[in-house]
Image 1 (cartoon, rainbow, N blue to C red):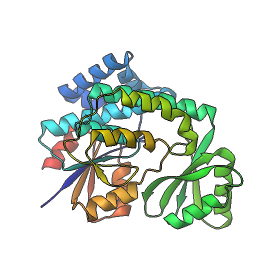
Image 2 (spheres, rainbow, N blue to C red; image 1 turned 90 degrees about the vertical axis):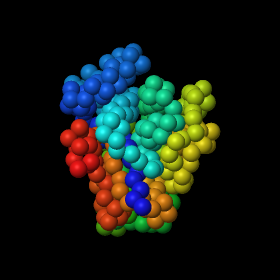
Image 3 (cartoon, rainbow, N blue to C red; image 1 turned 90 degrees about the horizontal axis):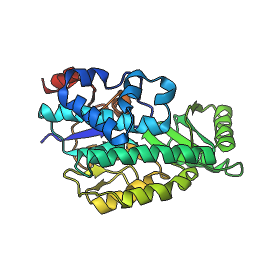
Image 4 (cartoon, helix red, strand yellow; image 1 turned 180 degrees about the horizontal axis):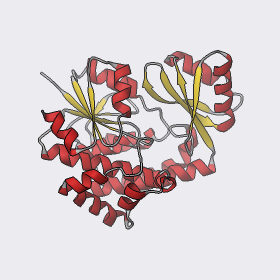
Length: 307
C-alpha cells in the first residue's frame, strides 16, 4: 500500500514574491495570510511579496514567512483532498510539519517561529559563528574533521542532509580552520551565508526563552506521526515534541537518516515538499532516487500532483 510523507522546507528556501501568486488564486491561502498579519501585528505578507531581500533575510522575518507559505500550500492540498501518512520538516520546517499534523494552532505556531527566529538572531550576535557544507564525506569522516580543529574552537555537524552532504556549524575561526583543512585534503567545502552557528552549542543562549514559550503553548498529540530531526524516529506525543523542539536548537538535523527511516522502516513510497522551493526534493534524489518527492508551491502544481 502506498504511503506519502509531507515534508516542509527550512531557512534558505525563501525568496521575494513567495506566496503572492497563491494568495491571488486561492481564497483560503489569502485568508491565512491575513490571519498571519493580524497575529504578528505587522505585515509579514508585504515582506514576503515585496521584500526587500535584506528584510526577508532577517531571521526573525524569514522563519514566519516560510511557516506561513508552507501553511498556505497545505490549505490548497487539503482543499484538493491530497492526504498524507507522515510528516517531517527540515529545522524550521519541523514547526510547519507539527502544525500540519495538528500539534498546535496556526497562530501559536506562527508566534513560536517568530520568537525562535528572534532568539536565534540574538544568539548569533552574542556568539558569532558560521556554517559550511562539506561535500563527499561520510558521518565518521565529518566527526574526524571536527575533532581535528577542536583546539581552535567549537565546530560540530549540524545538518546530515544527504549522502555526501553534511553541514558543519560553530565558531568562526574553527569553521574556517576546518574548511582550510578540507581544501588541503582535496575535500570540497562551501562556506554558507548565515547569521549564526545554527544547530550548535552556540545557540544555547536561545534555548531558555524558546523553552519557556513552548512550555506555555498548547501542544496536542499528533494526528499523523512526525519523524523528528533530533532522533530520526517517529513521535506523536505532544509532550515529547515540546522537548524535542528545545533540543533541536542545538542538535544536528538528521535529515538523511530521517528519510532513509521513512522509506526503509515506514514504507513511504512518495513525498510532497509543501512550501517554497525544491531543496528537499533535490536532497531526496541523492538519498533514494526510487522514491520521488514532488515540490509543490502553486495551485497548478497541486492539481498536477492529483492528475
